[in-house]
Amino acid sequence: MIFIAQYNTLKVSRKVDFGFYLDDGGEGILLPKRFAPRTLRVGDELKVFVYHDSDNRLIATTQKPKAMAGEIAKLECVSVTKQGAFLDWGLMKDLFVPKSKQISGMREGAEYLVKLYVDEQTGRIAATEKIDALLSNDELTVKEKDIVELLVYRESELGFVMIINNLHTGLLHSNEVYTKLETGDKYEGFIKTIRPDNKIDVVLGKPGYQRVEDEAAKILRLLAENDGYLPYNDKTDPQEIYDFFGMSKKTFKMTTGNLYKQQKIAFAKTGIQLVKAD
Image 1 (cartoon, rainbow, N blue to C red):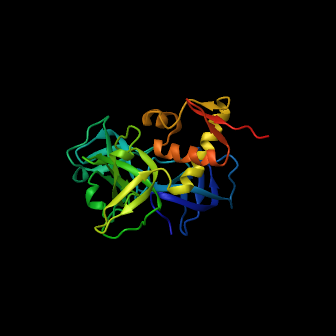
Image 2: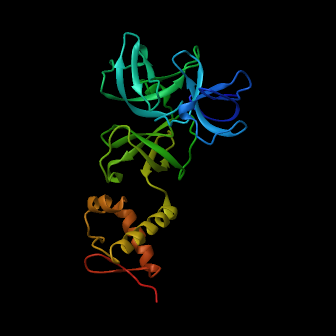
Image 3: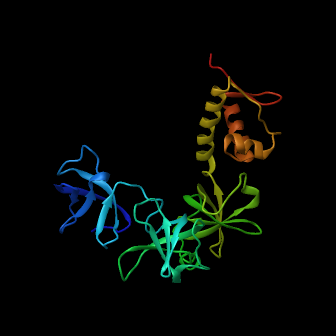
């Protein structure tokens, strides 16, 4: 089975002057010559992205799209017609957004948050700006402490509404935000709390000690790169810590405390010092 607007691993069935045909159980899917690795041979298997070209034929490419079917991404509008708009998604053929799937009309040069889908009638990839109806917390596919992909959706009075794994919504509270967030930005995060009504609280980064262990390696590396000393401690402004380390002040304090107990760092009056091994 071929998955449209997704990656497929296919075997090369034959070579032609203008490229290679990949085995799909039928006549084959063309991989144009310009997208084929120089060392590609008949019988090789290759991971390719499959979608429809302008003539409605399936075509394969080794180009990497900015998003694939089922994903949500912020993309730039490159042209507008009476039927709809076209977005740049990183491939030669632009992504179509029907006029009925737009909220207030798209403009060339502007960026829009859209979800990619395969049209049931045509089988072709398209996108919709009407995302709310496609997000639901009724049946959750995540649990507390799960590491998830987060996408910034919109700002709210309590913080930021985040899209979780392209399926659900969660809230990133203002006191957990340590950097500037913009709609469409993607982050790794985790599920902090799931409430009885299926409302979800999320946090950027990784949970618990796994998060501390990852950040510990970063702090030790940065110390080594800066002659064993960094002018940051528990009195440093949270934004300064985030700007330099890419972590919250809470995580910084927890991580440095752990490193101190392991006798890997020492606390100085104005920062932290790497402890040299004997």
